[in-house]
Length: 183
Image: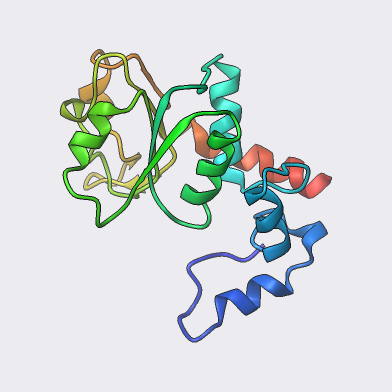
């Protein structure tokens, strides 16, 4: 496992190629990425996206034909999660730092996966009442409390469902890491 971010002086691609594919629990080696992006999920799957999928499966949330918005375009969360959702026939849109009018995109989405790392910036005005939000982020707010991207106090009674932070995707990610290491 490589903890990121890494110094800019290090060639990240070269570093990823040094990871043995059979030990690559983060799915960063190009061989494992290629497998994932071709629809082959027999190898390692990045942990946060895998945890997000496990969470929606546990609660019986079917993504087929649903409009899913991922607010993250990283190689660690956004892109792998998009592939996993596409494999389940979800309609997938990715938003990122350059996306204009984010609220227009969130209001069209049935299910929103967010991993921005900006404490509580998504309030109830971003969502329809039937929205489901999977909050993958974890940061500290101004009070030093761990939170996600979602202002859970504001949305609590205004959307269909959301994953808590902490004790949501992050905890499941840690359990999946242990499972992957044991494999």
